[in-house]
Image 1 (cartoon, rainbow over the protein chains, first blue to last red):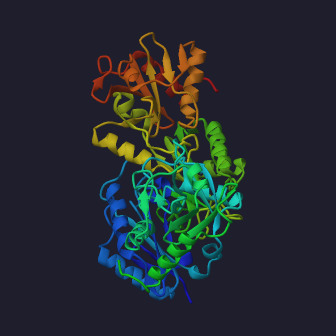
Image 2 (tube, rainbow over the protein chains, first blue to last red):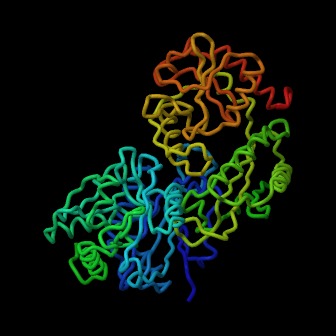
Image 3 (cartoon, each protein chain N blue to C red):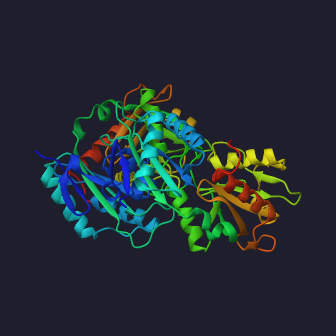
Length: 287
Length: 287
């Protein structure tokens, strides 16, 4: 089955998808993106993802390339062409092509690219076994709330994690408080069974999964608080997990050299994971 | 005359220069660049620029795509094909094309792109009249010494400057000290005629022009110091200027709402500019 990409209004074979060398996404990381999971032939949380895309574009004064309705139609068409029932759709919008100059050009058409990828999400070992995370200094800029492709520090952190045999790196601010993972939000469960995750600000991405988990926690009557927590708090936590649209609720069983509990996923993490996967699979609430 | 770009081993018409949609430069700003000016048919300071390119690649563990000798041959060929006697050559190297995944992939061929642009550098009004700069918070990451294409905050700052009718934005750290411009290094001349510019660290780019100006200052016996200075110091300075490979020594005559001196380029700035332009034009020293 041929794999297509959508590039500026055309469906092209994935391998032929190309953008100009003076695209500002390439020269300046002047663009934003979203990744939307597909489970059981359904896009998960597409509404919040497109809301966030619009917010990111607005923060950078990039004109949306097409209407939201057209975006949804293109997504559906690409998923159908590529026959993806479990996987993800990646979309990237940049300011467009212009002669190289730092300042935002006027009257430029934005670039839009969409690709899909099949991923056997539900059978991932990390979901059942949990993962190790390491902690690293947060070296990123001060506007991590905008989902831009300016992801080099995140890539460096993720590479450090992999080199340490870990799945993710949790980044730590100047006050010793964890901000978030390089591609996920960080959570812990305190000794008194309270869920903690850092409140939204310019320091972290407003995770769609993060918000959904907070909604589930509220509905299920779990104790939770949006509060920044330290590396020490995390290492002495009863449980921990990391969340994102494509890693769902991934239990954390080790932070740096410290094993959490008995080194297996904690009960609350596992419960939240089950709830969330049920939600993704369309077997639960429609929030 | 056709304008060519060099893309991964081929000379192609500029408008047809393209990279794949999964190039890590496009998806992750996982790449570095250099801009080398061309004056009087000569590349200016090509050695230090290629040194810095190698350093940037090394910091990010990207394999150089070709040897330095080949790079120099390609530069010469592209400049000849495009007939550029005054202007610049832009080169960008990214980690290459790989299925999207934050962590650095292994065994990937880096992407290399080179373009040229004709610019009538010597007749630029900003060199004779000076410019206004504004000051803005430095919102960038903590590794500004690596010359990456992760330039979105720089673009945002330059756009703010343009909106304020200014040429450049000088960025200010958490201690109220100026780091550098969005695409240039910042300098002031104190009341006792001492040149000040911030010392190199992870906070600023190691400007090739910056270093050359320090060398000239030393040779000419000028008083200078590599020391961070505050916005207040800058606003009460006798003179100020901003330096880069393509803006050379551009006098600063206004910072935010404060006019420096009589609002015309200061004598030391003008002298340094003349020395530096002579150097660029090959009429002076060979350092």
